[in-house]
Image (cartoon, rainbow, N blue to C red; front, side, top):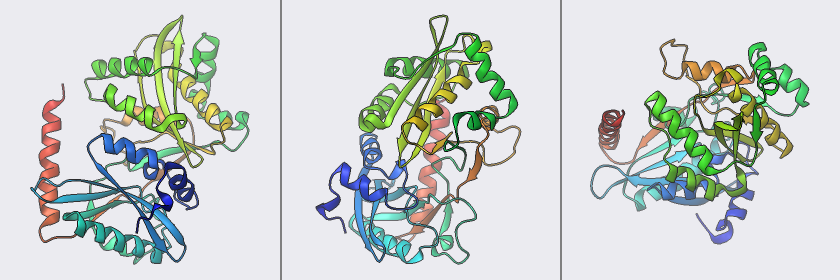
Length: 335
């Protein structure tokens, strides 16, 4: 199930890229990131009729002493129509569940909504709360830069040019310290929790050359920074923040545009803006962020989400109660 042939990052990721739904969250490096966040990463090489398929599964305590839970982020990476391969993966994960005394198996698939065939076995599982963004905006980087810019909404396109005219300078080799400064400023201004400096350092360290930090300055003053991650031809805008200074110069639009151009130069064919509201609720806390991201054109994608297979009697109920308790604690901790 997990022979040494995929035991290194290079061999794991090379095999991963051969599958149609390969993505960052199934990469070797992301498994290491999650491992340092308290999860235990199990990497399975599942033998299928279509060839070996890598599956990165995260095992964590369930809230019940002696029992665990298994979560597969954006996996398995086969096509949604490849039901035989999916069933091979599930058998391997159920075996892992027995070994790890798991209450349930949770798959958050990488498939867009509407692509999962009617009657797919995954659709018979119980719906589970999504851990990753259910919807996103994906910008096609394959056209020429002029065509990509022309595909932006007129306001976003204007703001990119405005930032250039007003002297916003983009550093494509910015530092982790600059990113942390901007994220902490955003936390203080918006009274929200964002990734800790420790987590950001782990991401940068584990992703290595796949991670890039870009920063914007106006009049020599740091005003915004983002971290992007690239894998399997996609660049993802993972984290970002802004000081709130010089907003009239529109540094954030130029920052994203330059990140897209850099990703394109490095061979990426899509830029994932990573998360917009999955509905049209005008009161959604991400509504303003969605308007910003939608300004870059691109295709809106909604994922099929997460579902859960119960491996032990009462497992789903126990996990639901544990998740509710954790959400309550996080809510109390917000400033």
